[in-house]
Length: 268
Image 1 (cartoon, rainbow, N blue to C red):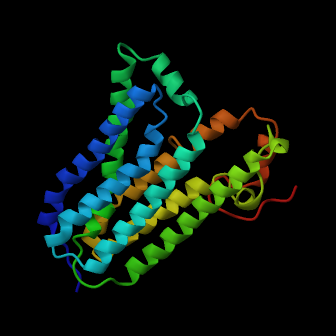
Image 2: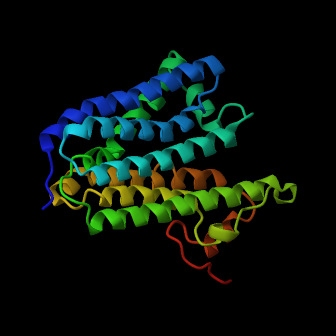
């Protein structure tokens, strides 16, 4: 019989928030020294990893199943560290991200303090909120069940989509013959956003790990729901496609390729 230690879970929320905050404040200091705020994108994956590790330590005496605790920590860290490494490598040698340039150009008062409020502290809060299932999983008692393994399987699908999609796009961009062209090969012919779809699967998969206890699932479902909103309607798909709308060939690409959930490309 699975249960959930609500008291221990509540006590672990503040240290997890502190971990997310520490990563973001440390990244803010690095950004000020380097003169670019694009480094905060690297901190996104690192923040989740830090929260997972702190939650693992805090839940050591919470009665949670050891296998589940270790599994959710490893899955989160693998996803977060891979994402951070990929973004850091992709941004090496580049200047400021145009998104942050535009934001800081309209900052009232100090641009640095504006970035701290609107980017770093906001992202820290999102990391803490979206990671609620990761934090909760450490306090689920009883052996792992079907929900946990289903979640791990969905996580693996998501990580695969992200990693393969990122690699395919990097190879495409590395070929000078593809300059100015729309990537429409491999996974990118099945969905316009394999990396965002991968994130979607990762976070719904991590959420499934707490579904052995319905009450814990109900208390944390806001996390994958929020991530889904960000990926589809917020700073992910919707924002990127607004920037790409005028690119040659993009309209034809959208006509034949799914906007998010993978499916075979339409023939036209």
